[in-house]
Every structure is written in C-alpha cells, then in structure tokens.
Length: 293
Ligand SMILES: [Zn+2]
Ligand SMILES: [Zn+2]
Image 1 (cartoon, rainbow, N blue to C red):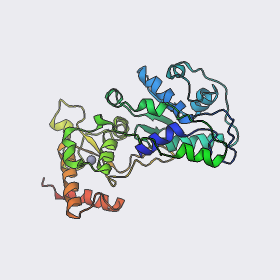
Image 2: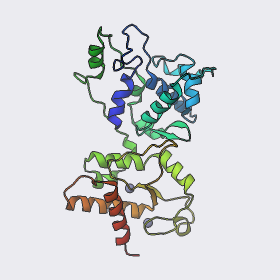
Image 3: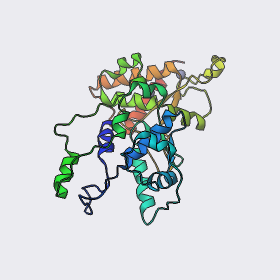
Image 4: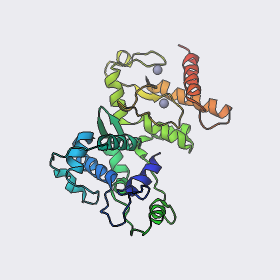
C-alpha cells in the first residue's frame, strides 16, 4: 500500500489522462504533492501537521497551489474565501480519505493528519519524493500521456520503509514477510496509539488483565496497541475516520507472546498470513485462552 501510494502521489495530477476532459496544454496541478508539502512544512516547524477539508479549499485550492512551489511557500499560506462548488466537496473529501491509506497519514475527526515522529522523519528520506511532482513532457494523445505517466518502465520502485517503526526484536516475527512488516508499522503508529488510549483510557492488558499502572505505579501507560485483523490488512477508514475497532491494548509481554503464537500457528499451516478476519480473531482468542494465569 505504501509503495503504491508513493508511486501514485507524485504522479497524480489534474487534468489526468485517465479522464476524458484531458487537455495537453492545461496547467498541471499536483493536489497530493501540494497537501504533503503543506503537512510537511508544518511538521518541520514543530506545528501539528493536519489539514481539514475546509482548509484544503481555503488554503490549497483558494491560493491556486499546484504542488510545484517550494515547500517554504506553504508555511505562509493565507486563508481565502474559496467555496467548493457542485460536487467538489464530495470529490475532495474522498480524495483525502483515499490518500489517508498511506501509513503515514490518518483521517480522523474531519482532519487528515501526518502520523510521524521526529525520528521517523529523520530516519526516512523518502519525504522529498512524496512532495516532488513527477514532471514529464506532455504527449499529444490521451492514451500516450496516460501510459507515460503510469508506466514503471525505466523507473525505480520506491522503497517505503520507516525503520524506526521496527525494533530489533521484531525480526523474530517478521523474517522478511511484507505482511508482518505492515502489521508492525500499524501497531507502532504514534497517532493510532494516541487515539486509541484517548478513547480507552485504562491500563489493563486485554490478555492477562494485569493493570500495568497498578503493578508498576511509577509508569504512565505501558500498554502497546495490537491490531487483531490479518497481518496484511491496513487500517479501515470509515466516514468518521480511522477505525479503532479490532485494536486492543496489550502489555509488552503478552504482545510479544501473541506474535510468537501467530508465528507458530502460521508456520504449522505453512501460510504467511491469516486467510480471513474471522480466522485472525479466532487465533487471537485462542492465544488469549491459552495463557496460564
Ligand atoms: Zn498482558
Ligand atoms: Zn500485535
């Protein structure tokens, strides 16, 4: 998913050759590069990196941003009175929800949020790629233009890897399996953790029911978030926002042990991932009922 979006974001532009109203001489606009530049420029300044649907109209569209401006340009954008017309509101809203499926963005409470820590930002150097439009000479026909923009020929697939979201001990579970890397990336999302514990403000492990705050009174909250769905599944984004269902809080021991349980189970059946949501939930319950309290 991340690799798909890192290809898609710099290449998606208006007018896009997939649509019949494409004109080769029109001025190009890269909406996602523009939004990324806005978020990253705010992040770099230590501000909360988020943008609402209204702000996309008022700040991005109202100021005629095209995604090709220097990143500093986005810091000083002023509000405009731009109002969406016709179907624009729905279209832009859906674009924001669509793009929020990349692991470093989340859609929550009407905002698109950049889900990054300072360490993620320092360790991963792909952000420049996400903010830089893929610019090519326009082709005369719509078909050729479409093929040129979407072709991967001669290009390089982006490697999307937030190293800081993996700990050395994860190796035991990951073993190079993509689905497991993705799973850990979700569980280490700083924003998901924040949202989950805002909604579930307790410190009791879902597996061993130990209240970590009672046992270790000098700690704030030791619980980690565990995503119960199949390892390859991304977060579900609903109308309201990023779904916090199918997420539980586990103490570090139980969390490690449940992943070991998964690994054994998957190896036994010689599969890389659970075959359905139901199966994933079942195996979680199985692990939970197998612990000796
Ligand atoms: Zn526990
Ligand atoms: Zn987990």
